[in-house]
Image 1: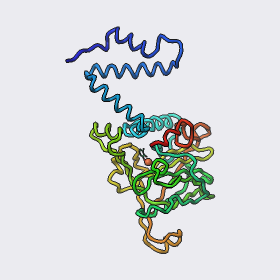
Image 2: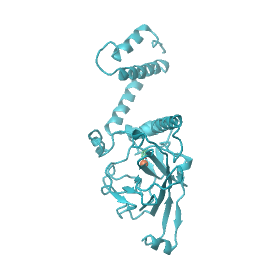
Image 3: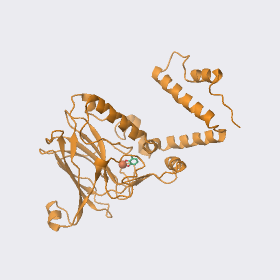
Image 4: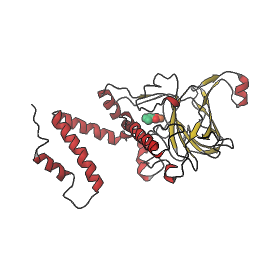
Length: 319
Ligand code: MBD
Ligand code: FE
């Protein structure tokens, strides 16, 4: 059976009451946004004749999403992170701030407070014996090609099983997470391991939603970066390793053509020796170009609850 009641004065008045329009307290913007959100959802219920069974099963998925901080994982899967990037790209363009290495999403797995080093850091704790050694290096430059010395390069990535330290309690503290300050030539170098792609855990709430859409929850092997330097626009980005089955089929929509990097396998013992390595390794080179800005608010990463960064985010430890 199909009934249509959304446009009746009764429902329209009801929505205004629900959104607190007749109350003095609360937030004006909060009321406007909630009114719009609820109106869109009420209309959807009417248009699709959503049944009570369907509604309550959605409530139960929302409960599951809240329990495991799953919404931080579903959000990129539903494209919200990428959509916010598209909006920030458009804002940059309007400000005349385009140029430089493109941004892409932060994702939900950053942890604040990683050890800091000058020029070089070893990122892995040496326990991932399945993994290929990665030599990750690059130069930070401004849009005129001048090296940026003293830039802060924060790097984090998964292990050979696709797990991230802190969220994966089997890994040591800050494994595969480091902050490297660029040297006088703007260079940073890390010894680490080649990460594997990430897969949304089987059966979790995010997995259920993706399955409903006929989609997978896989990300290609990737490496996250925050890069900042005084006088330059803060950059949140990632590189995706080439030749992964998911390089161009990322459930989180983070791939950008300019950010796909081909690792180079090096078997020459002399090259290994030069870097203090024992055997063959894969070199990954990622040079970064930072746009210039005097606006202090653009020189820092935007605020959001992050693990070990704020009280709010402390609950993320549960994941
Ligand atoms: C990840 O490693 C990630 O970067 C994102 C965006 C989502 C899930 C896992
Ligand atoms: Fe990631």
